Length: 276
Picture 1 (cartoon, one colour):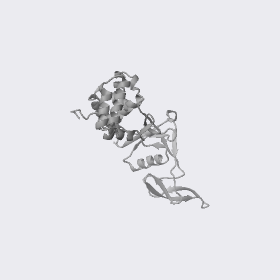
Picture 2 (cartoon, rainbow, N blue to C red):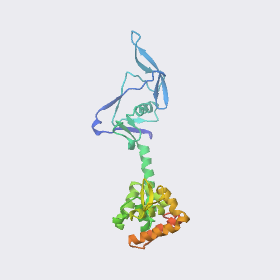
Picture 3 (tube, one colour):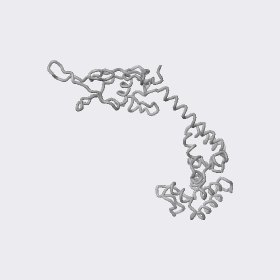
Picture 4 (tube, rainbow, N blue to C red):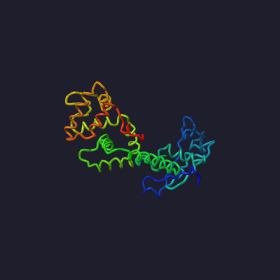
């Protein structure tokens, strides 16, 4: 079996025993069979009366005819290094019968999807590498930094135990490792966490009408709020937010304070970590 061998599979298990008959498309205006990013010349075939009955290919890796439907079935294998097999696959893809990427197959549109052993293996390796990086990064986080991730991801942190917060973060490593790395590497991470804490405790609100403190609009959206919180001219207001957050949270612990300090300094989740 070639490294370029792929298998086509039925999206709906009920259709596994059946075959899919596919006839190539012929462009009468241009006189060609358009397949993939190539075109193949075709010629009309006439009956005894001179009437065109169908069209056939002239010079193509595989004979094509608009009068012949080629059968395809679940489990059929193709070698993409073989020009004939590649042409057949492209014909299926062009007509939206075959989805070349299994994870993007749409049952409402496609009948078959492609299984590519090498591509699937590479995706698994890439995902495993990403998860490994995310796990290493999360293992270096403090409890406060995990809390910040939960806030930024708009979790109901105020009703969660520390174990539930950790469970959420480690769960994110498995379901969306890329997101974990994006958050940790984002230099505005703590500022965003601080903003979500302020929202959670009802100090500010975020809606389509902007980011508000009471009736005062301090920013148009969350991204602008990050810039506003980090601006030196707003240091006094940020300090007021910090004190109000401590009062409502009933604590002067490190999480609100660290977030507020980051809002002033524009720091990231790991900026003081000697390992980063």
